[in-house]
Amino acid sequence: MALHRIVLFYCFTPLADPEAVRLWQRTLCEGLGLRGRIIVSAHGINATVGGELDAVKRYVRVTREYPGFRGIDVKWSEGSADDFPRLSVKVRPELVSFGAPEELSVGNGGVVGGGARLSPEELHELVDAKRAAGTDVVFFDGRNAFEAKIGRFKGAVVPDVETTRDFMRELDSGAYDGLKDKPVVTYCTGGVRCEVLTALMRRRGFQEVYQLDGGIVRYGEAFGDAGLWEGSLYVFDRRMHLEFSDESSTIGSCARCDGPTSDFHNCANPACRQLTLFCEACAGGGELRCPGGCDVDGETESAAPDRAVVIS
Image 1 (cartoon, rainbow, N blue to C red):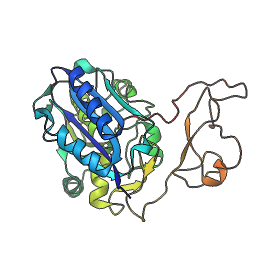
Image 2 (cartoon, one colour):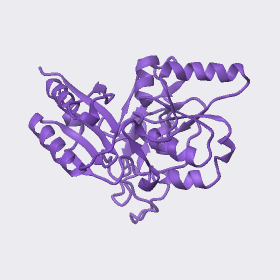
Image 3 (spheres, rainbow, N blue to C red):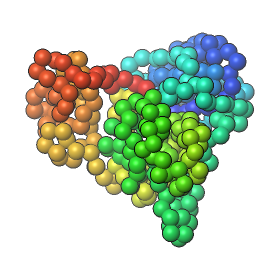
């Protein structure tokens, strides 16, 4: 029986012809039977794809032959092409949709002006050093707020954002101005969102900003559930969430009974489809409705896509 895997990677590098890269990536993935989502822009590439292990290995090897992509940091995880509904390869103005492509500068070395990168081990060293000096490191979640419901760094600041575009509003609101003179470590799933977020924060006066290199994925590989992380990692495919060890805690709460759960389900209202946490017992106990925003006529204050597969 063939082994299957999913890979996640990104690379910020100037691309003169994103459309040509898109066509090459689509042809490569189709020929190897891979599925997933790849975004290409003038700033680089952001990809999550899955398939048979040998095919995924060949995909990574060929992709690394492109001069700008030779140094990509590829993160491997359990899964397959079946965890994605289709293959999507698109050109976008941004690799991550902050809505500020004009603020991002990318050179051959990656994002210009971003926060200092910390390995998982260096993160622990920073936390210990700051504590010894009488200062606490502020963890700043660079993901959508719902992702933090099932997993986050202990004591982290979780901005009230539904989409990545909301970060611009939050940063400009003044709500986090009190952090501008504190050591702030941003984190996200694989690191790509923090590449941009830290640059945006530094442009707005945050003085000491770091990013967790490789994101939560690399931290989980290094420390599992024995470090500063608690809970599950939300992923944007049919797996929905990952755990780093058998010692993982469950910090999410069922919207119906308040019991522990890490399982998101779409609201049954077709006009809503909001991802909501339900435990196994409640999920099997009738129509699932999110706790707010929906009424009996199918109206909703906000709508969310049906488990859309996107790259974090």
